[in-house]
Length: 391
Ligand code: RFL
Ligand code: PHB
Image 1: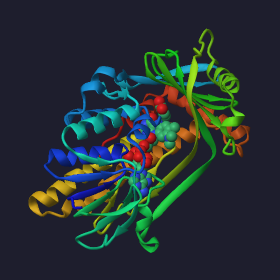
Image 2: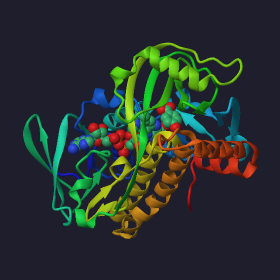
Image 3: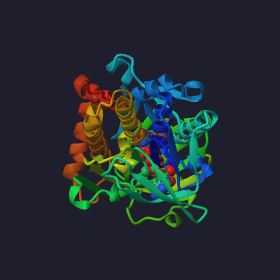
Image 4: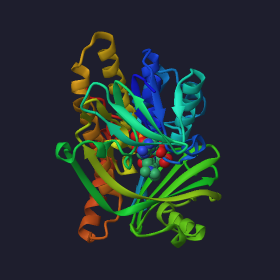
């Protein structure tokens, strides 16, 4: 089999890349190890930056997003029995965020690609990348237990943090940086209306909590838990107890309960592989970098990467120009490192670190107080949250 761009992974990055390339008339094949049902129902991110929304609308993917996405113009910070709202609208010249589940973005992309005759192969696993240093690289994969080979001009490694693409680059060529955090997030999806009109980020003496949402009838809540916790140790009662005690710190505010329909634990990690290109292999999204979810940046960075990559590949086919391919990593990495810094900052500000003493806890509160009072500090947070674009 042959195509122009072989894409590994049908997450947001791989699917949007395939769609953007098709808009330029460039063929691709997407190889995905999971089933369509699995990728369409995987509960993950929920916050789209303004820039991401603009990109999706411009690419013709805005219909359901604009109907069902919930536009928010701020977030609330809760600490020391106080609530403070960061008003993005006022602080960033009218910018905001849109709440729209990652699995909805994925569903929109899959249906759009398939309706346009795009090729996505589910339940096939890329096992090996061949000749990535050459002009005709290929992907070896298995479909129904049979080995197949996909020859391409370019390979896009959009196979997430645990995929095979990054590890196909020789170790001595990889430049990477990382940080682990001494806690995890337990997330629940709940059939209940939101208890607030904005997302609430809470720093409480027992640890972090976040009240988020997916629709007028579904909420998404997170609590900081221990790295070695497992779901058996978190029956629904205990989850509700922790959510109530960490979020209900304001007179008269109550968290609405409902049926928990999904529960998962995610460790927190920051990682950047600056080697986003090796020969004809390009890494994008979580395959190259991950952030702790506190800044809501992961999916936004993944989609930003592939917008640069599609432009670079298009320039190569159109004019034989390699300039944008050469600049691909640098263009992405400026945004990636901004996202890394912001996510680290939000994580440090809001979580209880097991090694911290009361001094560090007081520093967090001092910073939250400053954020609540200072226009320039709130503006910096707002500017980062809605998405900062380097020129
Ligand atoms: P994905 O989504 O992981 O997709 C990779 C795909 O590759 C497939 N795959 C393979 N296919 C073929 N052959 C192989 N050998 C393969 N190996 C893997 C996988 O099955 C999968 O389908 O990566 P992508 O496209 O780069 O997208 C990244 C985002 O998924 C991720 O950054 C976000 O979910 C992060 N994230 C958030 N991002 C935001 O922008 N805003 C948020 O509010 C936000 N909240 C979150 C999050 C991530 C979370 N978790 C669970 C990590 C909240 C949480 C709890
Ligand atoms: C979510 O709704 O899943 C969500 C919102 C904000 C975050 C992380 C996740 O910072």
